Length: 140
Length: 140
Image (cartoon, rainbow over all chains, first blue to last red; front, side):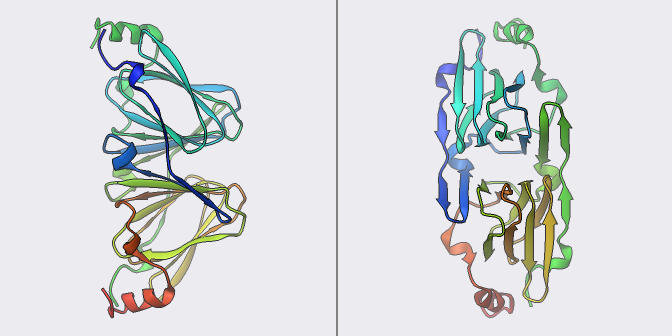
């Protein structure tokens, strides 16, 4: 089996400064994000309980941040699956070759993702079957 | 008078894909953000009507995005002042040498900022008086 294993995946807690004027959460990329960021996207207005993502990337690295509500990120490496529950201000690095599913647990959940590549349609592995073939080394 | 003038400041509308599973807003940095991003921060849970920011930077460029609610960004170049009302998915590039104030118009307003530099305490110009001196070229 090739590629990263989920044992190395961990949650980060980003610094949040909170006072009467609100809450500021900051990600210094050099500390938390192990790549040069080329693209950012965020997802909101998701009905509670909805699952999104459900794909892996061949080449794109992503750093996912829960920016509101509660986000469950389920990661699979083809052998093991593990779920992480992210509270606001928590982040997780998802390497290419990891199949990730995001469940938006609360109606106000916001997911913010930083990526090292621009959008490339051909970089997605959309099914678990295709993913398992890729991880088994039968497709590169 | 030295430095950028606010005539060049404009609003961008970032692409938003909306369907039954929610809304995804994306910023391809090469298209919208005219610098390499080193840091990101977002601000939320701000009481409606609160003003934040109220400073300029000597060197840091920022790209501000309204990620929810309604955000008013007021920019000043030392000669002219102008307000921009941002809806969700709209962004604005703030060069160093522009004094910016953000007013969080709605209770659910979220401001997301991308910066080209790490946090540097000495890079802030905190008062309009100091800013006007700087823009007049009396301090560099």
